[in-house]
View (cartoon, rainbow, N blue to C red):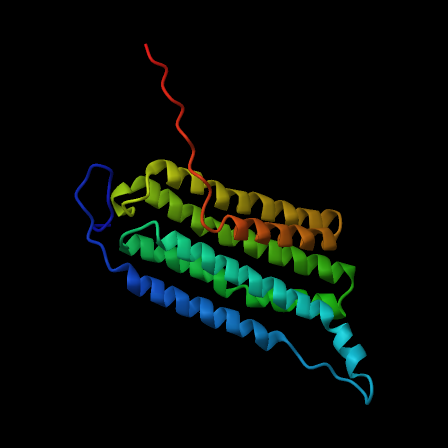
Length: 223
């Protein structure tokens, strides 16, 4: 592509990052709002509203987990865009892939909520595996983003060096591997353990939303 940058090559033709950020924020806002549509008022007889709401509590848990998850993804995305000083066509397509992973979250959330309330153990196992796979696949474009930024250093913001970019590549790799393992845990062992693993991974991405500390280069031994 003509606007891509090779190390040591000519400066890229960069588009303003503001439009990409505004579009992305709009997508996040819509997705996080859509989650509430899956909350339902339970059917109940007179005097049984409290117990009916209690039966729906697992679906409310699924909503809270996914709401926090999307919030964590937004924080990570916000930090991601601070690493670049502009965007290219390729980088914009990578960002669209990231957003695709975000917009599918309401579906596995709805499936998980339904399985928690109305399903049996097998249904819950399928729902947790689906959620874990969606989360694992979501990590892939983030890895592509960091790889692209690693290969095109002139796209980076002035405060970002190569070591910092390399350090961040660990996070999407961790997501791919551990979300995948979480799905296997839910499939083979227990779906509730798989759900717990998903929650732990969300916490991890939340704690590291500003990025991992860069690797320190070892000082060269003096002759």
